[in-house]
Length: 342
Image (tube, rainbow, N blue to C red; front, side, top):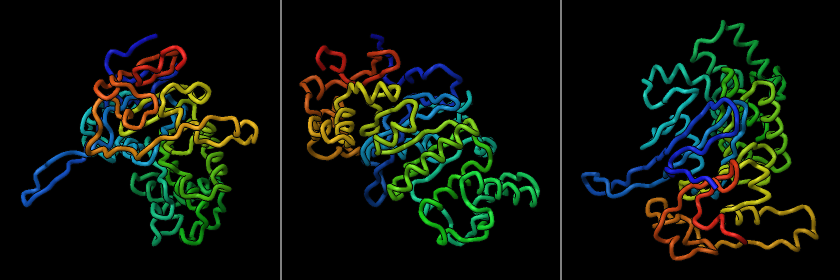
């Protein structure tokens, strides 16, 4: 067993060329009160996360609502400025860049938002929406941009002749395809997918995920795929990080995490995923968590999960667990995850 000396140190990625390296990143939002707007506390939305993403890899980020997943994704892209920690993109520390330098790097890192209804401007045509990043970054002539828009629509499975239509004329799944086309317009290397299927019908979700995988294979993209759907993450991710109350409690290759989860929180999430086999489903042991996720403005002492953990001990309420490698590539932040019979 290998122990990471510093809990904020990034667990090593799988072998490959690291594109994104997140080290000890925190994002705290101040709580202001009074006439003079004094800070009386902070919401610890992200509280010290670390991970690497290799070129062409998909890292799944899962957890309950309120665990800080979306804030983590926005912080990685510098849409939220981190309170602490470093984010390296292709070896460049994003926090050291000026606004103009960061703007030049923006084409290489994009985002697909959760709700296509709110992320697409209803007053703009599809051609204007997809072409906007091309115009903003001065890419190509007007004819070249028009050709590129048609190419992108074809790539995401939409009819290029519909480019002059408005978002409300499309279904939810089609609108999300438009959002994906906008995200890949500038040939990025990295895309944060912030719950891209959560607002879609179940019948459409698999189509969008398959589209993301197809585009990844064609363009060599790296994804940070944020979701609360454990079954869908298992389908698309290479590795999975489990997030709880602003911290990553477990990180492992996808098969390893699903077949042998080590953290009690991961086990609870895994047990909530239905199995399409009545016999197996009837024999499964469900882990029921009591209560709600604590407030990130007043997190519990020690292990953040101890207030809901079914196997918590006295040490859990006082000591913050280190992130340890209990198996090759399998990292867990739990005091007792490596004990026999766990």
